[in-house]
Image (tube, rainbow, N blue to C red):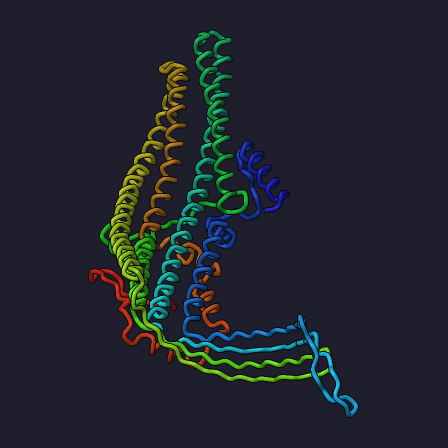
Length: 506
């Protein structure tokens, strides 16, 4: 975020918050608008999507174990060799024998190049198990991404209704101050004509001062809610429209909610896929006991020439072609392989236990959220009735005061009760909506498709397919994958029938 945008957000949050934030614009901002903006720009969500794309690359990297590698090298060299004691040699020079000095140095130079191709043929199932683990990691990451999406959307909903709640609180506080101002003016007028005492005027002044303090507090609370909204949505709230009902998305009974939790909750699904990855990594560790087979082919050139100090020259040229198939099997590793198998097995045990933990946690979440929803609905009904009755009582007390049946303090107390009841009703509406969203989040259905169907959704499968089908595939890769599974350790999950079976990333 630029400094100018940050400054604008801060200035708007402070100034509009202190002014009440009750700005009228041509088009009211809706919850759908806020959800769409956060879905597209929220940094937490964007970062998680980037992390998921990193996880997608793990599948590509795992597949390289089935593909060939080609390398090339080239070199150029030059050398001079000095002869310490060259001596002389008898030779015929111009038809006569003569002593000719031996060469005292030799200059040589050369260049060479080579190409090598290596192709794994069989890894004992290590490559296949690594691929299965990477695919399970991708599925785990997608569930983690779903969980983050739900969390962000839930935060948007809460921030939205918090701002609306605090705007209503501020409105009620402002109306309360206005009413108490009129009450104080009326008390002073009645005091002037001797209808009431100075005590009644002081009571009105004290109650007005308290209301003004509450107004300042409401302004500060609204400013904080606006800042929280800007942090999660990415812009300051304007005139927020009433939030749409979530009733159509909610289950009809707690039993239905429990059933949906096991199928849709992202924490449970992520734990199951993590168990699949852990089981595959046990197979990776066991594959270290099995033989490996690889093929290698090479082609090389080597050319060189040289000059002797007596003027003689020579030249060499070589070309080589090689090929090999290598099989290897571990015989003794000092206990390394068995230790790695035990460690991988315990990680699988921990992952299996984590599935049970995730299920219990999800059931606790949905149970808590459901009961909070029921309580908030009952509270909302009670507060609506309280506001209705309190309004009637306030009007009756005012009329009774005018005929001398009630004191000024009675009117002030009735006004305070009405203001408190209205605030309680606003809070109850907010709590009921947040509780509904919490139920949807616990079930795993608080997603942009349900909340804002018109928004273009981010599809992690597209990113996966893009990198998975990138350059690097060879025609014989499926054959190598099939061969590698022969005699390989099983990657099956040791799970109860209720748990998911391994599923490859699509």
